[in-house]
Length: 221
Image 1 (tube, one colour):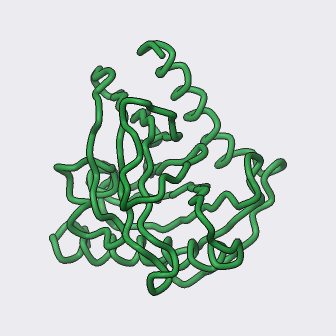
Image 2 (image 1 turned 180 degrees about the vertical axis):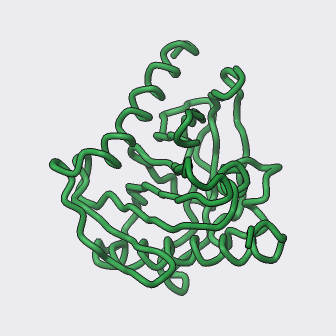
């Protein structure tokens, strides 16, 4: 694929994520887990037998700071606080152009459910975007012969996914984070185990992020 092919593919993913967020007639979300701090919802995925999950939480933190903490970059803060992430690497920068970056990423996850789900890795095409109303990463897994599977990881597959940090025009020091994921983790894992593990993992993601932002003094009173 050429860089332009990758960019076209990534642009379609970005459009799809906005569809997930805004088309309430098509996507009838069911709450899977909810507390005063976050909400996890899901719908049946259009692409495989699993689910598309949406996690939502608000933070009294400027949008760009939250985006910096959640963007999957090896040199970013995420590796310090995201306990489910073992490694993040940029395999190839395809394009860097102001507020829009295009790259191939590899993310390695820790084992889950007391070791019942072994470590996974995902090779994803990612494009970042910033508009007047949000910042986002928009990702989808790719077949890349130059980056073969690593023995100690099961190669998973991410259908259209990403994080969207929604800006509040009335308050520049507050934002809403939305995480959209629909991972096919592959391997011989019972579906009910996957369905149980993912909402819990997303809840941990939001809680750990909130704690990291507080500990680093990023929360605005």
